[in-house]
Image (cartoon, rainbow, N blue to C red; front, side, top):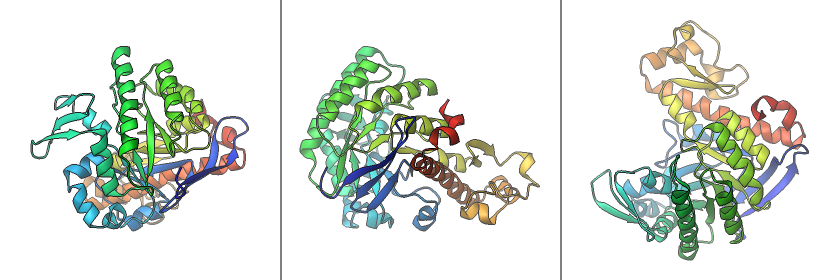
Length: 367
């Protein structure tokens, strides 16, 4: 890890592999475990950076693929990088674009060199290689950048997953060679599908490269939740204990709690913003549809224990009215609450780990 990045584990749970730590970056510290909101196009939908900061978010995501298509990394670079462009002065992570490219199953061709795909914006053919992904991320300027990987869908045959896992490792080596900025930490991604031996081999190979951090990818792409838990439980202990561990695309209470018990540190998911845009709130792990008639005359806050701006100022009835009226404010208020909900959940787990109360206070989510 470069001198601008460090990770220290301060406390370990006595009953599980859960740990509380601090990940230091050039734009500040991230207290782990921590949920990270997704801001695909250099914005977390419907909220301002100030509102986002008030949710307790410490690190946000942006996406290489989408920003390459619009507005283009050169514009972001000319603006002074992502932090300046989106006016977020805390840590940022950029996904490599691998997942988005591989979801274009009808529009792309995979080779050992990279992926050729047709832009959904203007129809132009784009050749995204590991080197190109890193060049784009170097230009965007996030604190943490992700290696370009091949994310096989679920279900996929063992042969397909094995080929994708091996290609991901070869691409990682090329990403390392292409990476130019010491103020950016390059994380490798463990693939391997639902095959424990492929995951183990991939984790061992990546650990040998001594990267600043490690991610588990290729989960939450269609597998049942119990299978995700098994993959994470088996793979996490094989990753270096002194580096941050990031579980990609996971953000439910149960998934995060179980992954934290396995030793994971960082999480991201579009759940809080996507649910908000559909008029739904996350309340103590449950999904509430504010369009339902039961909320029309309910003058309580969404959660009387929640410190967020929404819960401190507005009732369920008012938010239900806004949702039914398709007012944009509804999506802003629900996003503020939903992000606060998931960030607070990981904050509470962190406090419980420090106090060695994790398995008792979060037992309902660990079984």
